[in-house]
Image 1 (cartoon, rainbow, N blue to C red):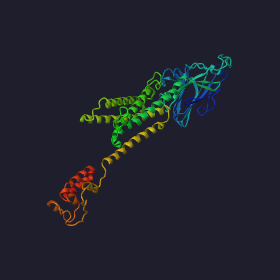
Image 2: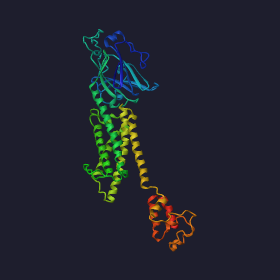
Image 3: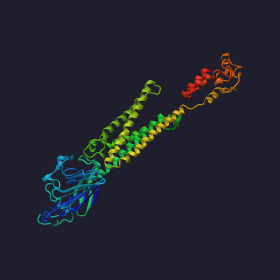
Image 4: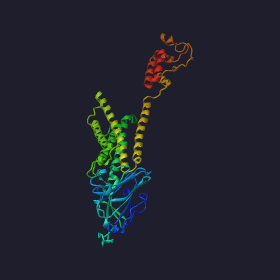
Amino acid sequence: MAQQGEVTVHWSANTASAPANPCTPAARMVLTPAQLMSGGSLHMAVQGYMGGFVAISFAKSPGTMFPGDTVLGWADATGTSSFIGTFHVTDRSLDDSNRLTGAADWAYDKGVSQEGSITTICFSRMLLEPRAFASADLRPTVMMSTDPTTNTTTGATTAQPLGLNWAVASWDELREHYARNRGGFYLDLTAGAAAQAADNTWSQQRRGWVIAHGVLMTVAWVFFLPLGPLFPAHRWLLRGATAPPQWYRGGGKQLWFLGHVSCQWVGFALLVAGYGIGHSKHVHERGRTQSSLIPPGGAAKAHNPLGNAVMIIAFVQVLLAHATRPAPDSGLRRRVWEYGHRIVGRCVIALAWAQVLIGAHVAAGEGIGRFWQWAGPMIGGMATMVLADLSLRVVGWRQREPATSLEALSAATDVGTDKQHYVEMGKGGDNMGASEATPAQAGHGKGGRLGEPLVGAGGAGNGGSSTAVAEALVRSRPSMAAASVASVAEA
């Protein structure tokens, strides 16, 4: 047994029939001694752990897909839907035209089973098999003599390693796997040792680069770039604070502006780095485009074009912010620019949030972490930004429109007088407010009325207080102001 990447390989060689396994047929072929002497035998069981298809290929150059002699199969947990077939791979694509059937099929006793997410394919083949174009003679892999008249070993001290490629996927159909979910290795059938093929080193390195790409994009689009717009949107928190004069090129500038610009530039730098990694040779399989690494269909196909679109809009936003920004006193032109800058910024963040979640889906499909390992922190960060923005907007609205009592407004208006600030309903005498009132005021001055002192109580010098109170109420809360202004008018 040997384990490589996402598969485990079991085998036995030069036995008359395959060992009993859940995936081998009950009636198995039994080779004669003459057949074993001339051609030898190899029985294999290959397990994959992604719940979809499993493929093993006898390759001339492990790590390179073609040419190769391949056995591929899948099954569901109930066993009602299963497939296993033999293929001759001649290029990077694999479809039904590559399948070998009937007399051309070099594998026998084929079977497939699935338990949970583990798919197992079983098959047998002759070591000497002319129908297997890429692996016609495997006898040197068990130090078997090539003399068809003797079933003896050669004089070699070590066996020739057997070159194999493997591939797995999470789907039960014949379509392309992700680049991460394949590899090549050399297997020593006599010692049971497996050595990684050189191309697998690149595959492992690619995994690290893909993780770096995802982390950079997540930090840029989920933290820094959404955080930057919160500074100008809620600048009231900083109360006009400015940077110290000793700050390089920032002295005297308001802190909200410096915070906004700093977050945007740090986020943009991370974005450019992540985009560069995503389109570099470290992520792309040699000689292939990124879109060809993504199976056809589904949201994953949009990752590449949507990423390009987001990057273009981000560049436009940078140009809009720095190359076309009018002076603050430019009037209508400045207001139009502010609306455009705000709308473009929100749109690109919304697209980018969709893009990073699609990226999480692509990475999980390649076996680089699980979807929620990526999407969990992403969605948590997005929710935090949205809730912070909404909470600050509510707090800011309350700060801009404080609840001010009528008593406080009246007291502030009539400061410096010794007059009563208000008269409660039904209280007071006929002489209240009459001693120094004007004739118009005297006509309303009997019996103690609601709001009476606001309309001139205390003499002619206090007659302007009603207007001041009304204006203060309007600035405070419109609902309270409307009722109070009506009361003043009646008085």
